[in-house]
Amino acid sequence: MSCELTQRFIPGYMDGELDLVRTIEMEMHVKRCAACAQKLENQRELRAALWRSSLAYAAPAVLRDRIQSSLRVSSGVGIQERPFKSPSLPIWQWAGAVAVLALFSLTGWQLTARHSRDQRIAGEVFSSHVRSLEANHLMDVVSTDQHTVKPWFDAKLDFSPPVEDLANNGFPLVGGRLDYLEGREVAALVYQRREHMINVFVWPNPTGSKAAQAIESRQGYNIMRWSHGGFQCWAVSDVAPSDLAEFVRLLETYNSSESN
Amino acid sequence: MSDTARRERFEQTVLPHLDAAYNLARWLTRNDQDAQDVTQEACLRAFRFFDGYQGGNMRSWLLTILRNTCYTWLHQNRRADSIEEFNEEIHSSQISGSADPEIQVLASADKETLNRALEDLPDMFREALVLREMEGMSYQEIADVTSVSLGTVMSRLARARTRLRQSLSVELSRGY
Image (tube, rainbow over all chains, first blue to last red; front, side, top):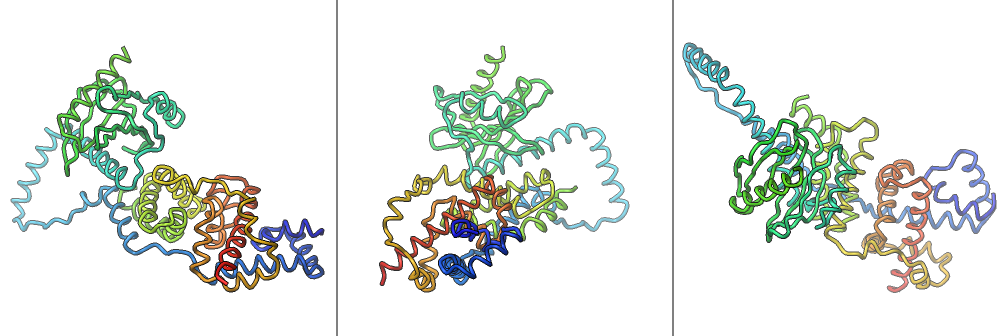
């Protein structure tokens, strides 16, 4: 093996990535060639210096805790597995309670299912929004141009979300990203209202149009949902409720003028 | 799978690689707090996409997500300096014919100097070295995580090592 080839293979040799034949050739060559042996020695010394200094960082314990508790929040455990005290009721009172519950669930189960689904999505929307702000992961595509953002989504999703810039109305579009709600990938559009961010989550929902409705507010964030043109949309922000309602009304107007 | 079972499975299979994830994030962001934020974000993303995980190398899978999260973050929050390409001529001219004294230079390099030299490498060189020397990853694993070919991994590692040796020589010759 030539010196040139040997020196080219030194890293692969050190990293154990050469095949057996080359490895043997290398070893034979450096036994005979002082220059190549020196180069190999330099590389080894570099590695030894790196290893000696043990430069790798271990994850701080506080980070591990933070991650575990946010996993609990995002899998809903914090809400669902709240321990409860079992009340000490006589058996006949239990039976009565069960009967009342059964009656409730018979009459109201459809309503409850709908309601709890909305609540669950609202929870996911809320935590996605907070996470997007906290971890500086607001946008995958940064653009104020709807003609940039829309094709970006089209290439990444199996649906094509409506994208409107509302800059003229005081809600400029600033970007978009992929997010995950309801067990599927969704489009997240990011708008700005002065210093406040608005996340709009959009995914297909063929069950017809539904007028905008405020779902809830928690910890200073307001959430609204609506359906239009085969899409389900959720908006979340810490702007004033009236601003969010105005924003949603504008989006609805634009979207319907576009689809008509 | 229930939410709890899913979370437990995630914690058992993914969290053992938290050190590797944090280490890469720490070397890419060069800052503890940022590294923590990025690692947390990446873990939550991994959790959301956990159902799509097809088996295979869990550490590579996690580090791929971590790396993407990291670069998105760097792109939004940082400086162009790390994206700046290495200028071979400028940097190479700083050292004069380094030969055998190199061994002594390397042998005397302390942790702080090494740290600084490594931090000064461009991102793509630094990440290749971190994955190779600290995580002990194979070329194939590094290629998977960084989405480049095996050939590119090899040339990045070679250039990273050359550059590291050069900047150590410069750094240490300044002090003596």
